[in-house]
Every structure is written in structure tokens, then in C-alpha cells.
Length: 129
Image 1: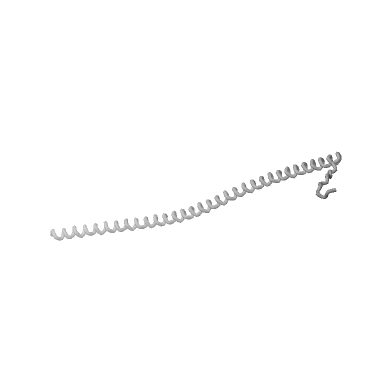
Image 2: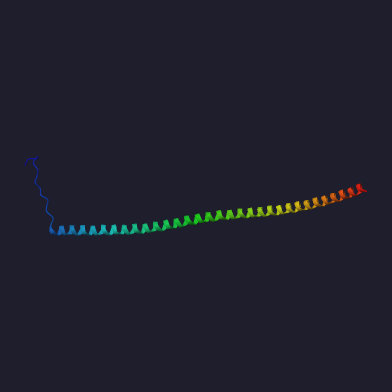
């Protein structure tokens, strides 16, 4: 036989039992892959639900932080308002004190003017005598 000539070697054909075993193995593999994909889908759905829950919690926490910061701001504004109210009360009291002093001065000025008129009247009386 020529070494360059191809040998015509035929592969033995699979028996019916081998074909059935191969088909059964492929079916089992397909079922296994389907179950694996289904389990992965369930796991992904559970992960998505967890992520949604975490996102909702983060949103609630962000809202709580925002509300806490707003409450702190309001408390600071209230404290500032209280300081302003105290300052206004002090200024009002001081203004009332000043008004009382001005009134006392006005009364004293009227008393002095009355005395001056009395003196002028006496001077006129003396001059007319």
C-alpha cells in the first residue's frame, strides 16, 4: 500500500442504545441548565428586591437627615429669634426709661419756666411801685 494514499477508515456507528443514552444525557443537561437559569433568575429577583429595600432605606435615611438638619436650622432660628426678642424688650425698656427721663425733664423745664414767670411778675410789680 502506498504511504501517500489515504486509508479509508470508517468510524463505527453509534448503536441505538448509545444514541438513547446520549439523548438522555443531553436532556438531563438541558434540565439542569434550565434549573440553574431559573435559580439564577430567582436569586436576581431576590437581589433586586433587596436593592429596592436598601434604596428605600437610604431614601428614608436621607429624608431623616434632611429633616434633622431642617430641625436644627429651625432651632437655631428660634434661638436667634429669642435673642432678638430679648434685645427688643431691652431696647423697649430702655426707650421707656428715656421717655420717662424726657418727661421728667419737660416737667422740670415747665417748673423752671413757671418760676421765671413768677420772678418776672415780681420784677414788674417792683418796677411799677
